[in-house]
Picture 1 (cartoon, helix red, strand yellow):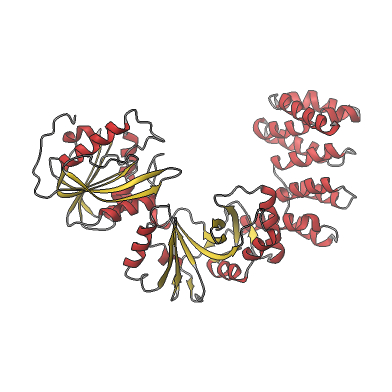
Picture 2: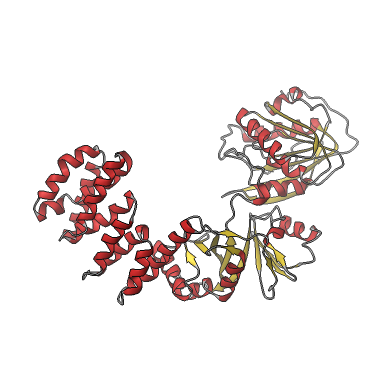
Length: 531
Protein backbone atom coordinates (compact mmCIF):
# COMPACT_ATOMS: atom_id res chain seq x y z
CA UNK A 1 0.00 0.00 0.00
CA UNK A 2 2.91 2.33 0.76
CA UNK A 3 4.34 1.98 -2.77
CA UNK A 4 0.91 2.63 -4.31
CA UNK A 5 0.41 5.72 -2.16
CA UNK A 6 3.87 6.95 -3.10
CA UNK A 7 3.14 6.42 -6.78
CA UNK A 8 -0.14 8.32 -6.56
CA UNK A 9 1.59 11.14 -4.73
CA UNK A 10 4.19 11.36 -7.50
CA UNK A 11 1.42 11.60 -10.09
CA UNK A 12 -0.37 14.33 -8.18
CA UNK A 13 2.84 16.38 -7.87
CA UNK A 14 3.45 15.94 -11.59
CA UNK A 15 -0.08 17.15 -12.43
CA UNK A 16 0.39 20.13 -10.13
CA UNK A 17 3.75 21.21 -11.54
CA UNK A 18 3.48 20.45 -15.26
CA UNK A 19 1.39 23.61 -15.77
CA UNK A 20 4.05 25.87 -14.24
CA UNK A 21 6.64 27.81 -16.20
CA UNK A 22 10.16 26.45 -16.52
CA UNK A 23 11.50 29.45 -14.63
CA UNK A 24 9.19 28.82 -11.67
CA UNK A 25 10.19 25.18 -11.47
CA UNK A 26 13.89 25.93 -11.88
CA UNK A 27 14.13 28.79 -9.41
CA UNK A 28 11.66 27.64 -6.74
CA UNK A 29 11.08 23.89 -6.91
CA UNK A 30 14.49 22.55 -7.98
CA UNK A 31 16.53 24.24 -5.18
CA UNK A 32 14.08 22.99 -2.53
CA UNK A 33 14.21 19.50 -4.04
CA UNK A 34 18.02 19.46 -4.07
CA UNK A 35 18.22 20.66 -0.45
CA UNK A 36 15.40 18.50 0.88
CA UNK A 37 15.55 15.45 3.08
CA UNK A 38 15.25 11.97 1.51
CA UNK A 39 11.61 11.86 2.60
CA UNK A 40 10.85 15.26 1.06
CA UNK A 41 12.58 14.34 -2.21
CA UNK A 42 10.51 11.17 -2.51
CA UNK A 43 7.30 13.10 -1.81
CA UNK A 44 8.16 15.62 -4.57
CA UNK A 45 9.73 13.22 -7.09
CA UNK A 46 6.99 14.14 -9.60
CA UNK A 47 8.99 17.34 -10.15
CA UNK A 48 11.58 15.34 -12.09
CA UNK A 49 9.02 14.21 -14.64
CA UNK A 50 7.31 17.62 -14.75
CA UNK A 51 10.41 19.65 -15.48
CA UNK A 52 11.37 17.30 -18.30
CA UNK A 53 7.99 17.84 -19.96
CA UNK A 54 7.97 21.60 -19.34
CA UNK A 55 11.53 21.97 -20.65
CA UNK A 56 10.58 20.13 -23.83
CA UNK A 57 7.47 22.23 -24.47
CA UNK A 58 8.25 25.67 -23.10
CA UNK A 59 11.98 26.14 -22.44
CA UNK A 60 14.73 27.73 -24.50
CA UNK A 61 17.62 25.71 -25.87
CA UNK A 62 19.85 26.90 -23.02
CA UNK A 63 17.19 26.05 -20.41
CA UNK A 64 16.79 22.55 -21.87
CA UNK A 65 20.54 22.07 -21.62
CA UNK A 66 20.46 23.11 -17.96
CA UNK A 67 17.61 20.70 -17.30
CA UNK A 68 19.45 17.85 -19.00
CA UNK A 69 22.55 18.43 -16.84
CA UNK A 70 20.40 18.39 -13.70
CA UNK A 71 18.73 15.14 -14.73
CA UNK A 72 22.07 13.49 -15.45
CA UNK A 73 23.20 14.47 -11.95
CA UNK A 74 20.14 12.74 -10.53
CA UNK A 75 21.25 9.49 -12.14
CA UNK A 76 23.72 9.19 -9.26
CA UNK A 77 21.12 9.93 -6.58
CA UNK A 78 21.19 7.46 -3.65
CA UNK A 79 17.42 6.85 -3.98
CA UNK A 80 16.37 4.40 -6.67
CA UNK A 81 13.06 6.13 -7.37
CA UNK A 82 14.73 9.47 -8.05
CA UNK A 83 17.18 7.78 -10.42
CA UNK A 84 14.31 6.00 -12.15
CA UNK A 85 12.34 9.23 -12.69
CA UNK A 86 15.46 10.91 -14.08
CA UNK A 87 15.97 8.02 -16.51
CA UNK A 88 12.40 8.39 -17.78
CA UNK A 89 12.67 12.19 -18.18
CA UNK A 90 16.06 12.33 -19.86
CA UNK A 91 15.09 11.02 -23.36
CA UNK A 92 12.50 13.80 -23.74
CA UNK A 93 15.36 16.28 -24.09
CA UNK A 94 17.27 14.24 -26.63
CA UNK A 95 20.17 11.89 -26.18
CA UNK A 96 23.83 12.63 -26.81
CA UNK A 97 27.15 10.99 -26.03
CA UNK A 98 27.33 12.62 -22.60
CA UNK A 99 23.91 11.38 -21.45
CA UNK A 100 24.58 7.96 -22.96
CA UNK A 101 27.87 7.72 -21.08
CA UNK A 102 26.17 8.70 -17.80
CA UNK A 103 23.59 5.96 -18.27
CA UNK A 104 26.15 3.33 -19.20
CA UNK A 105 28.07 4.01 -16.00
CA UNK A 106 25.04 2.71 -14.09
CA UNK A 107 25.43 -0.70 -15.71
CA UNK A 108 28.73 -1.21 -13.87
CA UNK A 109 27.06 -0.88 -10.47
CA UNK A 110 24.89 -3.41 -8.68
CA UNK A 111 21.27 -2.69 -9.60
CA UNK A 112 18.01 -4.45 -8.85
CA UNK A 113 15.91 -5.95 -11.63
CA UNK A 114 13.42 -3.07 -11.75
CA UNK A 115 16.11 -0.43 -12.15
CA UNK A 116 17.85 -2.44 -14.86
CA UNK A 117 14.51 -2.64 -16.70
CA UNK A 118 14.04 1.15 -16.59
CA UNK A 119 17.67 1.73 -17.53
CA UNK A 120 17.15 -0.52 -20.52
CA UNK A 121 14.08 1.49 -21.62
CA UNK A 122 16.07 4.71 -21.50
CA UNK A 123 19.01 3.24 -23.43
CA UNK A 124 16.49 2.04 -26.03
CA UNK A 125 15.85 5.71 -26.79
CA UNK A 126 19.21 7.45 -26.29
CA UNK A 127 21.69 4.63 -26.86
CA UNK A 128 24.12 4.49 -29.76
CA UNK A 129 27.34 2.76 -30.77
CA UNK A 130 28.75 3.01 -27.23
CA UNK A 131 25.73 1.17 -25.87
CA UNK A 132 26.20 -1.69 -28.32
CA UNK A 133 29.85 -1.94 -27.36
CA UNK A 134 29.04 -1.92 -23.66
CA UNK A 135 26.42 -4.65 -23.99
CA UNK A 136 28.96 -6.94 -25.62
CA UNK A 137 31.34 -6.42 -22.68
CA UNK A 138 28.83 -7.31 -19.97
CA UNK A 139 28.39 -10.98 -19.21
CA UNK A 140 25.21 -10.51 -17.17
CA UNK A 141 23.37 -8.17 -19.54
CA UNK A 142 21.15 -10.82 -21.16
CA UNK A 143 18.14 -9.32 -19.38
CA UNK A 144 18.36 -6.17 -21.48
CA UNK A 145 20.52 -7.20 -24.44
CA UNK A 146 17.88 -8.70 -26.75
CA UNK A 147 15.60 -5.65 -26.54
CA UNK A 148 18.05 -2.78 -26.12
CA UNK A 149 20.57 -4.06 -28.64
CA UNK A 150 17.83 -4.49 -31.24
CA UNK A 151 16.30 -1.07 -30.65
CA UNK A 152 19.66 0.71 -30.73
CA UNK A 153 20.70 -1.11 -33.89
CA UNK A 154 17.40 -0.19 -35.53
CA UNK A 155 17.78 3.46 -34.54
CA UNK A 156 21.31 3.61 -35.92
CA UNK A 157 20.25 1.86 -39.13
CA UNK A 158 17.34 4.27 -39.53
CA UNK A 159 19.55 7.32 -39.21
CA UNK A 160 22.66 6.08 -41.03
CA UNK A 161 21.22 3.96 -43.83
CA UNK A 162 17.52 4.45 -44.61
CA UNK A 163 16.01 1.23 -45.98
CA UNK A 164 13.67 0.74 -48.92
CA UNK A 165 11.84 -2.10 -50.63
CA UNK A 166 13.33 -3.15 -53.96
CA UNK A 167 10.35 -3.10 -56.28
CA UNK A 168 12.35 -4.20 -59.34
CA UNK A 169 14.36 -7.03 -57.76
CA UNK A 170 13.37 -10.26 -59.50
CA UNK A 171 12.35 -13.21 -57.37
CA UNK A 172 13.55 -16.34 -59.17
CA UNK A 173 13.32 -18.85 -56.30
CA UNK A 174 9.55 -19.19 -56.29
CA UNK A 175 8.99 -22.85 -55.48
CA UNK A 176 6.66 -23.23 -52.51
CA UNK A 177 6.12 -19.48 -52.19
CA UNK A 178 2.60 -18.44 -51.20
CA UNK A 179 1.33 -14.89 -51.60
CA UNK A 180 -1.83 -13.44 -50.10
CA UNK A 181 -3.37 -10.58 -52.05
CA UNK A 182 -5.23 -8.83 -49.24
CA UNK A 183 -8.21 -6.62 -50.03
CA UNK A 184 -11.36 -5.28 -48.42
CA UNK A 185 -13.92 -7.96 -47.67
CA UNK A 186 -16.28 -8.14 -50.63
CA UNK A 187 -13.68 -7.25 -53.28
CA UNK A 188 -12.09 -10.71 -53.56
CA UNK A 189 -13.78 -11.46 -56.91
CA UNK A 190 -12.44 -8.19 -58.34
CA UNK A 191 -8.87 -9.09 -57.35
CA UNK A 192 -9.27 -12.59 -58.79
CA UNK A 193 -10.76 -11.32 -62.04
CA UNK A 194 -8.15 -8.59 -62.41
CA UNK A 195 -5.33 -11.11 -61.98
CA UNK A 196 -6.84 -13.60 -64.41
CA UNK A 197 -7.44 -10.89 -67.01
CA UNK A 198 -3.95 -9.38 -66.74
CA UNK A 199 -2.06 -10.12 -69.98
CA UNK A 200 1.30 -10.77 -68.25
CA UNK A 201 0.45 -11.96 -64.75
CA UNK A 202 -2.32 -14.47 -65.49
CA UNK A 203 0.15 -17.11 -66.75
CA UNK A 204 2.77 -16.53 -64.05
CA UNK A 205 0.62 -17.06 -60.96
CA UNK A 206 -1.58 -19.96 -59.95
CA UNK A 207 -4.81 -19.23 -58.08
CA UNK A 208 -4.88 -21.26 -54.86
CA UNK A 209 -7.86 -20.04 -52.86
CA UNK A 210 -10.31 -17.18 -52.49
CA UNK A 211 -11.49 -16.39 -48.96
CA UNK A 212 -12.85 -13.37 -47.10
CA UNK A 213 -10.58 -10.41 -47.86
CA UNK A 214 -7.88 -12.59 -49.39
CA UNK A 215 -6.87 -14.15 -52.71
CA UNK A 216 -4.10 -16.73 -52.28
CA UNK A 217 -1.76 -17.26 -55.22
CA UNK A 218 1.51 -19.04 -55.95
CA UNK A 219 4.07 -17.90 -58.55
CA UNK A 220 4.98 -20.32 -61.32
CA UNK A 221 7.75 -18.13 -62.75
CA UNK A 222 10.03 -15.31 -61.66
CA UNK A 223 8.44 -11.95 -60.88
CA UNK A 224 9.03 -8.54 -59.33
CA UNK A 225 6.98 -6.67 -56.78
CA UNK A 226 6.64 -3.88 -59.31
CA UNK A 227 4.76 -6.27 -61.60
CA UNK A 228 2.38 -7.34 -58.83
CA UNK A 229 1.72 -3.68 -58.04
CA UNK A 230 0.03 -3.43 -61.43
CA UNK A 231 -3.02 -4.96 -59.73
CA UNK A 232 -5.05 -1.95 -58.68
CA UNK A 233 -7.80 -3.61 -56.61
CA UNK A 234 -5.32 -5.14 -54.14
CA UNK A 235 -4.84 -3.43 -50.77
CA UNK A 236 -1.60 -5.22 -49.88
CA UNK A 237 0.73 -7.91 -51.22
CA UNK A 238 1.75 -10.29 -48.43
CA UNK A 239 4.33 -13.07 -48.47
CA UNK A 240 3.20 -15.94 -46.22
CA UNK A 241 6.04 -16.87 -43.87
CA UNK A 242 4.15 -19.61 -42.04
CA UNK A 243 1.19 -20.52 -39.86
CA UNK A 244 1.27 -20.69 -36.06
CA UNK A 245 -1.37 -22.88 -34.40
CA UNK A 246 -4.07 -21.00 -32.52
CA UNK A 247 -3.60 -20.89 -28.74
CA UNK A 248 -5.06 -19.01 -25.80
CA UNK A 249 -1.92 -16.90 -25.38
CA UNK A 250 0.61 -15.83 -27.98
CA UNK A 251 2.99 -18.70 -28.72
CA UNK A 252 6.13 -16.59 -28.45
CA UNK A 253 8.63 -19.26 -29.48
CA UNK A 254 6.63 -20.47 -32.49
CA UNK A 255 5.86 -16.94 -33.67
CA UNK A 256 9.50 -15.87 -33.37
CA UNK A 257 10.67 -18.95 -35.27
CA UNK A 258 8.45 -18.07 -38.23
CA UNK A 259 9.47 -14.38 -38.22
CA UNK A 260 13.17 -15.32 -38.16
CA UNK A 261 12.77 -18.20 -40.62
CA UNK A 262 15.12 -18.76 -43.58
CA UNK A 263 12.26 -17.72 -45.89
CA UNK A 264 11.88 -14.37 -44.12
CA UNK A 265 15.63 -13.83 -44.23
CA UNK A 266 15.77 -14.69 -47.94
CA UNK A 267 12.88 -12.40 -48.86
CA UNK A 268 14.18 -9.46 -46.82
CA UNK A 269 17.72 -9.88 -48.11
CA UNK A 270 16.58 -10.06 -51.73
CA UNK A 271 13.99 -7.29 -51.59
CA UNK A 272 15.56 -4.69 -49.28
CA UNK A 273 18.03 -1.91 -49.94
CA UNK A 274 19.72 -1.32 -46.60
CA UNK A 275 19.10 -2.95 -43.24
CA UNK A 276 15.91 -5.09 -43.17
CA UNK A 277 13.59 -3.71 -40.50
CA UNK A 278 10.00 -4.63 -39.76
CA UNK A 279 7.01 -3.66 -37.67
CA UNK A 280 5.00 -6.43 -36.00
CA UNK A 281 1.23 -6.03 -36.07
CA UNK A 282 -1.48 -8.41 -34.86
CA UNK A 283 -4.51 -7.95 -37.11
CA UNK A 284 -8.00 -8.17 -35.60
CA UNK A 285 -6.48 -9.27 -32.28
CA UNK A 286 -5.70 -7.51 -29.02
CA UNK A 287 -2.18 -8.41 -27.97
CA UNK A 288 -0.39 -6.64 -25.14
CA UNK A 289 2.76 -4.64 -25.70
CA UNK A 290 4.71 -6.99 -23.43
CA UNK A 291 3.70 -10.04 -25.49
CA UNK A 292 4.55 -8.26 -28.73
CA UNK A 293 7.92 -7.26 -27.31
CA UNK A 294 8.57 -10.83 -26.19
CA UNK A 295 7.99 -12.08 -29.74
CA UNK A 296 10.33 -9.58 -31.40
CA UNK A 297 12.99 -10.14 -28.73
CA UNK A 298 12.85 -13.88 -29.30
CA UNK A 299 13.00 -13.39 -33.10
CA UNK A 300 16.05 -11.15 -32.72
CA UNK A 301 17.76 -13.81 -30.61
CA UNK A 302 17.27 -16.24 -33.50
CA UNK A 303 18.29 -13.81 -36.26
CA UNK A 304 20.02 -10.53 -35.42
CA UNK A 305 19.92 -9.42 -39.09
CA UNK A 306 16.17 -8.74 -38.92
CA UNK A 307 15.42 -5.76 -36.70
CA UNK A 308 12.08 -4.86 -35.22
CA UNK A 309 11.48 -1.13 -35.64
CA UNK A 310 8.00 0.42 -35.50
CA UNK A 311 9.28 3.67 -37.02
CA UNK A 312 9.73 4.06 -40.78
CA UNK A 313 10.42 0.37 -41.34
CA UNK A 314 10.19 -0.87 -44.96
CA UNK A 315 8.41 -4.07 -43.91
CA UNK A 316 5.53 -5.15 -41.70
CA UNK A 317 4.98 -8.58 -40.26
CA UNK A 318 1.21 -8.95 -40.04
CA UNK A 319 -0.41 -11.74 -38.04
CA UNK A 320 -3.85 -12.64 -39.41
CA UNK A 321 -6.17 -14.95 -37.45
CA UNK A 322 -7.42 -17.67 -39.81
CA UNK A 323 -9.31 -20.94 -39.37
CA UNK A 324 -6.08 -22.92 -39.77
CA UNK A 325 -4.19 -20.77 -37.24
CA UNK A 326 -2.37 -17.44 -37.25
CA UNK A 327 -1.00 -16.62 -40.70
CA UNK A 328 2.29 -14.72 -40.34
CA UNK A 329 2.85 -12.55 -43.40
CA UNK A 330 5.59 -10.21 -44.62
CA UNK A 331 4.16 -7.07 -46.19
CA UNK A 332 5.97 -4.22 -48.00
CA UNK A 333 5.35 -0.82 -46.40
CA UNK A 334 5.61 1.53 -49.36
CA UNK A 335 4.49 5.13 -49.14
CA UNK A 336 3.32 6.68 -51.32
CA UNK A 337 1.73 3.73 -53.09
CA UNK A 338 3.29 3.60 -56.59
CA UNK A 339 -0.12 2.85 -58.13
CA UNK A 340 -1.79 6.01 -56.85
CA UNK A 341 0.87 8.68 -57.18
CA UNK A 342 -1.74 11.01 -58.67
CA UNK A 343 -3.14 11.67 -55.16
CA UNK A 344 -1.79 15.17 -54.69
CA UNK A 345 -4.37 15.73 -51.94
CA UNK A 346 -7.40 14.05 -50.41
CA UNK A 347 -10.70 14.71 -48.65
CA UNK A 348 -11.67 12.98 -45.37
CA UNK A 349 -14.50 10.84 -46.79
CA UNK A 350 -12.87 9.91 -50.10
CA UNK A 351 -12.92 6.38 -51.45
CA UNK A 352 -10.13 3.92 -50.67
CA UNK A 353 -8.12 3.77 -53.94
CA UNK A 354 -8.41 -0.02 -54.51
CA UNK A 355 -12.17 0.29 -53.97
CA UNK A 356 -12.31 3.09 -56.55
CA UNK A 357 -10.41 0.80 -58.93
CA UNK A 358 -12.93 -1.99 -58.28
CA UNK A 359 -15.80 0.40 -58.99
CA UNK A 360 -14.19 1.31 -62.30
CA UNK A 361 -13.77 -2.36 -63.19
CA UNK A 362 -17.42 -3.03 -62.34
CA UNK A 363 -18.45 -0.12 -64.58
CA UNK A 364 -16.60 -1.65 -67.50
CA UNK A 365 -15.45 0.07 -70.67
CA UNK A 366 -17.72 1.49 -73.33
CA UNK A 367 -16.48 3.30 -76.41
CA UNK A 368 -16.34 7.09 -75.94
CA UNK A 369 -17.69 6.97 -72.40
CA UNK A 370 -19.00 10.22 -70.95
CA UNK A 371 -18.48 9.77 -67.21
CA UNK A 372 -19.97 11.85 -64.40
CA UNK A 373 -19.32 11.68 -60.65
CA UNK A 374 -21.85 13.92 -58.83
CA UNK A 375 -20.04 13.41 -55.47
CA UNK A 376 -16.53 13.51 -56.86
CA UNK A 377 -14.62 14.05 -53.60
CA UNK A 378 -10.94 13.81 -54.56
CA UNK A 379 -11.76 12.40 -58.02
CA UNK A 380 -10.51 8.83 -57.55
CA UNK A 381 -13.40 7.03 -59.26
CA UNK A 382 -13.10 9.20 -62.38
CA UNK A 383 -9.33 8.77 -62.52
CA UNK A 384 -9.51 5.00 -62.11
CA UNK A 385 -12.13 4.76 -64.86
CA UNK A 386 -9.98 6.89 -67.17
CA UNK A 387 -7.07 4.49 -66.68
CA UNK A 388 -9.12 1.75 -68.34
CA UNK A 389 -9.27 3.85 -71.53
CA UNK A 390 -11.91 4.86 -74.11
CA UNK A 391 -13.15 7.92 -72.21
CA UNK A 392 -14.44 10.90 -74.14
CA UNK A 393 -15.33 13.17 -71.21
CA UNK A 394 -14.93 13.31 -67.43
CA UNK A 395 -17.36 15.45 -65.46
CA UNK A 396 -16.60 15.98 -61.76
CA UNK A 397 -19.02 17.85 -59.51
CA UNK A 398 -19.41 18.20 -55.76
CA UNK A 399 -21.23 20.57 -53.45
CA UNK A 400 -17.94 21.18 -51.57
CA UNK A 401 -15.61 23.65 -53.29
CA UNK A 402 -12.60 22.21 -51.44
CA UNK A 403 -13.38 18.79 -52.87
CA UNK A 404 -13.60 20.06 -56.45
CA UNK A 405 -10.30 21.92 -56.03
CA UNK A 406 -8.62 18.71 -54.88
CA UNK A 407 -10.28 16.67 -57.63
CA UNK A 408 -8.98 19.18 -60.19
CA UNK A 409 -5.41 18.79 -58.87
CA UNK A 410 -5.57 14.99 -58.83
CA UNK A 411 -7.10 14.73 -62.30
CA UNK A 412 -4.41 17.03 -63.69
CA UNK A 413 -1.65 15.04 -61.98
CA UNK A 414 -3.09 11.78 -63.28
CA UNK A 415 -3.01 13.19 -66.84
CA UNK A 416 -6.33 11.52 -67.62
CA UNK A 417 -6.70 10.55 -71.25
CA UNK A 418 -10.02 12.27 -71.96
CA UNK A 419 -10.85 14.83 -74.63
CA UNK A 420 -12.93 16.88 -72.18
CA UNK A 421 -12.51 17.37 -68.42
CA UNK A 422 -15.06 19.47 -66.53
CA UNK A 423 -14.83 20.15 -62.79
CA UNK A 424 -17.61 22.21 -61.22
CA UNK A 425 -18.83 23.01 -57.72
CA UNK A 426 -22.54 22.22 -57.71
CA UNK A 427 -25.29 20.32 -55.91
CA UNK A 428 -26.19 17.24 -57.99
CA UNK A 429 -29.85 18.29 -57.80
CA UNK A 430 -28.93 21.33 -59.94
CA UNK A 431 -27.68 18.99 -62.65
CA UNK A 432 -29.11 21.07 -65.48
CA UNK A 433 -26.67 23.84 -64.58
CA UNK A 434 -23.61 21.56 -64.68
CA UNK A 435 -21.55 22.01 -67.82
CA UNK A 436 -21.56 18.98 -70.11
CA UNK A 437 -24.79 17.50 -68.73
CA UNK A 438 -28.11 17.25 -70.49
CA UNK A 439 -30.86 14.67 -70.62
CA UNK A 440 -29.43 11.25 -71.64
CA UNK A 441 -25.96 12.71 -72.25
CA UNK A 442 -24.01 10.49 -69.85
CA UNK A 443 -23.06 6.86 -70.46
CA UNK A 444 -21.66 6.20 -66.96
CA UNK A 445 -22.30 7.65 -63.51
CA UNK A 446 -19.79 6.35 -60.98
CA UNK A 447 -19.97 7.70 -57.45
CA UNK A 448 -19.53 7.29 -53.72
CA UNK A 449 -22.25 9.49 -52.12
CA UNK A 450 -22.34 10.39 -48.40
CA UNK A 451 -22.94 7.15 -46.50
CA UNK A 452 -24.10 8.72 -43.25
CA UNK A 453 -20.97 8.02 -41.16
CA UNK A 454 -18.40 10.77 -41.69
CA UNK A 455 -20.91 13.04 -43.42
CA UNK A 456 -24.25 13.07 -41.63
CA UNK A 457 -27.37 12.90 -43.80
CA UNK A 458 -30.76 13.90 -42.37
CA UNK A 459 -32.81 11.82 -44.84
CA UNK A 460 -30.70 9.03 -46.34
CA UNK A 461 -33.65 7.35 -48.06
CA UNK A 462 -34.68 10.64 -49.67
CA UNK A 463 -31.12 11.40 -50.78
CA UNK A 464 -30.72 8.09 -52.60
CA UNK A 465 -34.15 8.32 -54.20
CA UNK A 466 -33.05 11.66 -55.67
CA UNK A 467 -29.71 10.20 -56.80
CA UNK A 468 -31.45 7.39 -58.69
CA UNK A 469 -33.93 9.82 -60.22
CA UNK A 470 -31.21 12.20 -61.43
CA UNK A 471 -29.27 9.21 -62.79
CA UNK A 472 -32.29 7.98 -64.78
CA UNK A 473 -32.66 11.43 -66.36
CA UNK A 474 -29.02 11.94 -67.36
CA UNK A 475 -28.05 8.40 -68.38
CA UNK A 476 -28.39 7.45 -72.01
CA UNK A 477 -30.20 4.18 -72.84
CA UNK A 478 -27.90 1.34 -71.81
CA UNK A 479 -25.98 3.71 -69.55
CA UNK A 480 -24.58 2.44 -66.24
CA UNK A 481 -24.79 3.68 -62.67
CA UNK A 482 -22.07 2.31 -60.35
CA UNK A 483 -22.70 3.40 -56.79
CA UNK A 484 -21.90 2.65 -53.16
CA UNK A 485 -25.24 2.32 -51.41
CA UNK A 486 -25.77 1.87 -47.63
CA UNK A 487 -29.47 1.04 -48.19
CA UNK A 488 -31.11 -2.02 -49.63
CA UNK A 489 -33.36 -0.58 -52.33
CA UNK A 490 -34.80 -3.15 -54.71
CA UNK A 491 -36.74 -0.90 -57.12
CA UNK A 492 -35.47 2.68 -56.79
CA UNK A 493 -36.51 3.78 -60.28
CA UNK A 494 -38.58 2.15 -63.05
CA UNK A 495 -35.99 3.04 -65.70
CA UNK A 496 -33.06 1.33 -63.91
CA UNK A 497 -32.36 -2.38 -63.55
CA UNK A 498 -29.97 -3.91 -61.04
CA UNK A 499 -27.26 -5.89 -62.82
CA UNK A 500 -24.93 -6.77 -59.91
CA UNK A 501 -24.52 -6.19 -56.19
CA UNK A 502 -21.54 -6.84 -53.89
CA UNK A 503 -21.52 -6.39 -50.12
CA UNK A 504 -18.27 -4.56 -49.31
CA UNK A 505 -16.59 -3.56 -46.06
CA UNK A 506 -15.75 0.14 -46.23
CA UNK A 507 -14.02 0.39 -42.89
CA UNK A 508 -16.10 -1.10 -40.13
CA UNK A 509 -19.48 -1.31 -41.84
CA UNK A 510 -20.87 -2.88 -44.99
CA UNK A 511 -22.31 -1.11 -48.01
CA UNK A 512 -23.62 -2.37 -51.33
CA UNK A 513 -21.49 -1.84 -54.40
CA UNK A 514 -24.13 -1.85 -57.12
CA UNK A 515 -24.31 -1.58 -60.87
CA UNK A 516 -27.61 -0.39 -62.36
CA UNK A 517 -28.34 -0.18 -66.10
CA UNK A 518 -30.83 2.06 -67.82
CA UNK A 519 -33.16 0.16 -70.12
CA UNK A 520 -32.50 0.56 -73.83
CA UNK A 521 -35.18 2.09 -76.01
CA UNK A 522 -36.15 4.48 -73.20
CA UNK A 523 -36.42 8.08 -74.26
CA UNK A 524 -36.18 11.10 -72.02
CA UNK A 525 -38.81 11.50 -69.33
CA UNK A 526 -40.09 14.39 -67.30
CA UNK A 527 -37.73 15.93 -64.77
CA UNK A 528 -40.39 17.11 -62.35
CA UNK A 529 -39.68 17.34 -58.61
CA UNK A 530 -35.96 16.75 -59.00
CA UNK A 531 -34.80 20.27 -58.26
